[in-house]
Length: 122
Image (cartoon, rainbow, N blue to C red; front, side):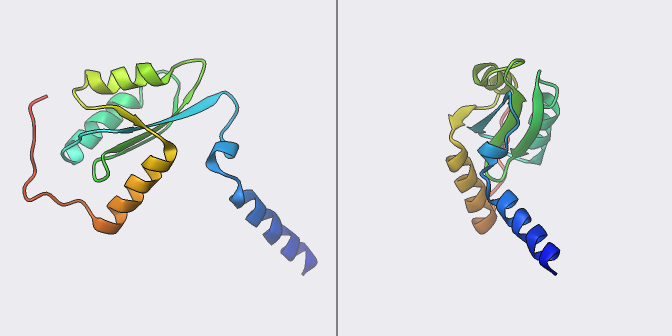
């Protein structure tokens, strides 16, 4: 029973570290707010960005208009990733991780609604 309690304590402590602390050495995280219109926009960006140099983790969400990228610092940088997003015709406004988390949470709470879907030529 003591071992089970100890294992539980270790799991709680491990889970309490911030994402930044858990981030692997030599990796950086960058978040962007974008202007995606629909799931097709989301998929287009995801498919394009997953092949950018050094990308290790990628989350693209059109509902919150956010992009989360973890990448190898030696292989890429924030500016180059922003340029890749813009090359596909989307906005790439850099935001903090806290702002990213707030936008994602707000999107989950309030949903994603348009009176009608607006699609732009890109």
